[in-house]
Length: 304
Image (cartoon, rainbow, N blue to C red):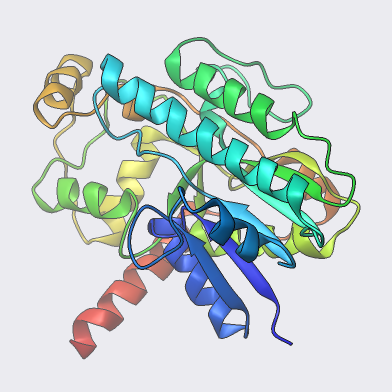
């Protein structure tokens, strides 16, 4: 019998990658999404049928934070995370054969703006503000369930990098049009993870029955924003990029309907628990990650 993985919110950048990888390994996949033809979030019976007897549930659901933080969007961002987490937890409580593991997304943005020292699971300091409160509430709801037969892990995911989605096309367009200089002071830290390593972390936790709780999911080698932009320019063969000041970013964010926090907040996050547990990153440095992403993009261009 094939093992079944349930991907909740499985139609986004990370979810599509996970679906592809699990299918390649012979798993059956059930996707919960608001998009057809998948199991709808309102279909509680369909969700129970998918979850009961599954090997693993991975919840990636949540409205994108790449938007303006007006009251309507803030409500949707919070509720899309809380409501879906509650639905999954309540469904697992009803299962005759509950999944052995439930992995839920969280966010590395739960930590404060940090330019002085890195944030780890044991010694990180939570910040303040809307995005931090979303992370706190998200994890509170996730860990409120008493599920004796289901191990739980919350992944505090940093910026996921990979081809065909996420932030990479946005940054590549900036470089392409000569805007690939430092953003703001350029001193703010950029914590990131290659999407393949994120998948490998899930498989690592899945195999290690002794692991549960909160995990920072980011490369052990975050970089400053100015180094990020330098490496991006280098990977694309560009020598120069215009810098963007704080006021330019804030003004531009209004135009493109996003928040400057996404670029200006210093996220300095280290995967302390994963490293202690023996996880080895396939892409530990940003240079390696960008080389892989660009090689894949070049391969796709050449075969198109």
